[in-house]
Image (cartoon, one colour):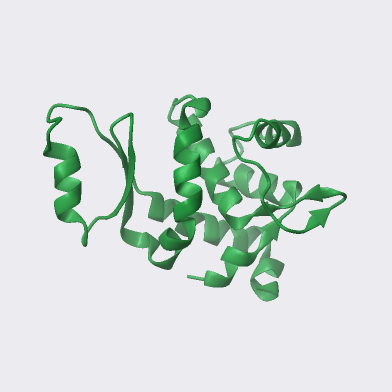
Length: 163
């Protein structure tokens, strides 16, 4: 796992290329859509450098966009994830340290990021706790991060060397 990717920044076109590869080209991912997500603060560009007068996307922004497009592919409305995006943004660096066993759980109201081995008891509590019978949705967020890193390295090998 390349922790230096955490500090990388990406232009909208670079993000677009990674997203197209992630979705297998089945999803229309135009620059206008990325701009809309940024303008509406769904996933704003939080990079510190500019490209053609516009802020670049941070690594966390790219991971969040990849997650959104995965959720969209599953048929979930993107705008329902505004709170979840803020939560994930704060946790991306923690997730990146050991992503393989990280799981995102939600009961529709709250989000939890847990390590599937270290946090077994807490995961069981979410699944069988006070609200037993509540549907819980689990997503292997760590495997998405590993896939995003692989796609970045395939699509933009210069990012690996620059890091």
